[in-house]
Figure (cartoon, rainbow, N blue to C red):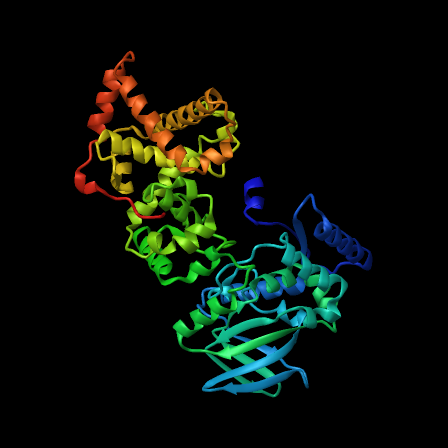
Length: 468
């Protein structure tokens, strides 16, 4: 849970009732919601699922297999305007917040298929501010909010009813989810409105361009803007076609049904980017930086065909080694390494690739992850090599610390883990370990097992991907 909260996930409590709350219960609910929203200790929210919401959810569930969302909006006199910009129809509406929370697809995220990210919860600064405005200053919401952008394939207005087909919200996911989490307050806010921009767009490429452009503000990370990139979507499609029980998560905050999908075949775009730069670019020193991965080095990492088997192999190896980065410390890692859990595991993954290179005397190349994993698992060497790589990483940081002390210098682990010096130290520790094996009891047999079991053809290696 702590890791999830660090990644901007939220804790959401839902109170389900088939009856109406008493006035006293409503007062208590408002007090709890206010306390949770203002708390700096527990980032959470509390929603009431009442009869109306249950009925709405039931009706939505009956249509959940339909690929698109169709909806009708009731318009108010003097609060909407029809436009024609070139050949594109547009409607601008001041829509009541209490009507916004009735739009299908907010809770399950289906309304935001074209959005660059899913809900990030109410714990971040911007969404907290939106929630506070709804609860304390709802009448000014229209003036304090930039508005919501939605696209649809067709829309008509008849008798003050706006009917839209294939509705997608491309900018406003965070706002609508925050409104939904404050639904009790939104229902009471009769004078609270938000500006909605509806565009009739049938061209999917144009829709994607609108989605990216309307989300290109500083609050959206480079990683979010890449979630709808053609290379990412092609990689997602290839992976999910190959692993039919798997799912490729491209958007932050996206929820995956662990019952419907095989959890061992669920991969994440962010994790993959960090693994690619550690393995193929041999630069785990950059793995901590999502901005560099999805901005500066994105083309080098993702603008090429990459096999689903390699995606899965990196996923398996990293998950397997990460299991050992726990409080029990089964590998006996230096405490400073354990304290850098956000960075050092990618050096661990890099160390595995270096071991395979040293065994095969392919020092300037990078092994195929899928071939490497097949060798490691078929020879029952995966756990052994993970432990060996962890021990070599441990030796590298301890040797670097000792060398700094011998030279009268201060050793800062956080600086070392982000420097290229750490890569040289890790490779040196691996070479020393393999050399020392020859002089250890049973060491020759261990080395022979490694040489035989991990022998790979030269065709299974390729040049390092440039990342600096």
